[in-house]
Amino acid sequence: MTPDAIIVGTGPNGLAAGVTLARAGLRVALYEAHDTIGGGLRTEPLFDADVVHDICSAVHPMAAASPFFTRFDLAAHGVELRHSEAAYAHPLPGAPTVLAHRDLDRTCAGLGPVDGPRWRALMQPLVDRGPQVVDLVLGGPRALPRNPAAALWLAPRVLAHGTRRAPRRFAGEPARALLTGVAAHGLGPLPTLTGAGVALLLGHLAHRTGWPLPRGGSARIAAALAADITAHGGTVHTGQHITDLRELPPARAVLLDVSPKEFLRLAGARLPSRYRARLARFRYGTAAAKADFLLSGPVPWADPATGAAATVHLGGTQAEIFREESRTARGIAGAEPFVLVVDPAAADPDRARPGKRPLWAYAHVPNGSTADPYELIRRRVERHAPGFTDTILAHRTVTAAGYEEYNPNYVGGDIGGGAMTLAQTLARPVLRPDPYRTPLPGTYLCSASTPPGPGVHGMCGHLAARSALRREFDLDPGPTWGTRAADGAPWTRDAY
Picture 1 (cartoon, rainbow, N blue to C red):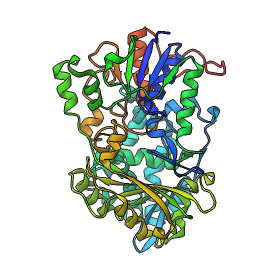
Picture 2 (cartoon, helix red, strand yellow):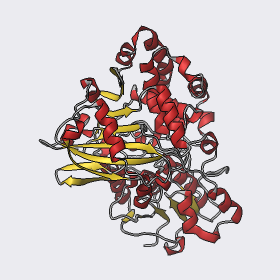
Picture 3 (cartoon, rainbow, N blue to C red):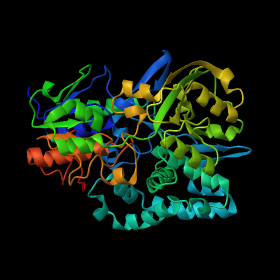
Picture 4 (cartoon, one colour):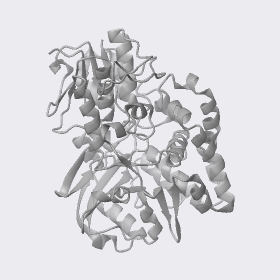
């Protein structure tokens, strides 16, 4: 059967595009180079058949809050999102670990009588307007007119925490570090306006929908999306490495969940020279180098409170994070990089077995680095958890360069799909009225290199699919996402 639409790549955005198109009644075919779907949502046993590890992303605050996943309803599709006692933790040298709880009152109490009220003043208005804030940040090019009030609340906070004046906003190091550790998720120099935007988006979600993990691993999300596509007549082809767009069967629309670099390889000289040159100038940012561990038991944190969080930021003080993140973005490898640790069993105890527990960690390193991150990460954890090394039963590492070999979308190890500079946030991957539509007829980009950018939220794929529905199929995607849900119930009205 000839497809109406083809999608190359089955990361979260490719799958979200597939759901959107298939629910609109189109015949959709997806092509994946690997033998398993998911992109950054893969979960596999690495050392022991009883214990699975998330290969890339593990914690999904935006999957719990994004407009796409809110309407898709992960729970209704069998995906249980589990929460640790605290959303995230930030150990500090010679001081108690500071914790971000889903309960904003509890978080503020832990920050003391001065910074507790300041944290509340920062986060409470965003929490109160959470859906509007999320829509503003994730809703794509048309989001601002829908959410002017949210923009008025968010913009001054971004300005206050995205410049060198940021340290003055809190009196003590715990609150400064707590927010700055979240800003480091933006994989770039700090402080910046984009880093502050990341911190406020993810930071307020910690107090609203939380930072959950899917029970059983990230692959559960990918499986739910793929099952919905096939339930609506779509097909998924794995082990199909597309090297040229001409290898694809004819279709009215082709959506590519790929980086600009990969798009240039797939399309070649068929792209106009000016557009090719603009794509070639697209910048890639700070990279991740990862280590997976199999441990004999829980991490022996010096402050046991750290173990209450599935996500732990190891970056030191605000000044240290600013310094190391900025140096790393300039290509300077440091001995004390920012390290993000995820302990899945802290939220999902089923992930551990007697005497066997998974742990996931990555260090921020210069783009393209070939350095093995094991010692950097081991030492960083050991400093805050004496005896950690003795719990390691097995480990494996992936360098930044190795990440690109594993997934061409992670150029040089940039798992964010491109540097989150202010310019590339506003024009991603290039400045066009419709950022998803390319000069090739019927061809669209839908990866994290398009708005709204990185994260497991599905919005890049969803918004690109909606653009294709309008332009290639003359279907108005305004009133509904598609025809009918898998259970026969109609989709609800939305504004996208």
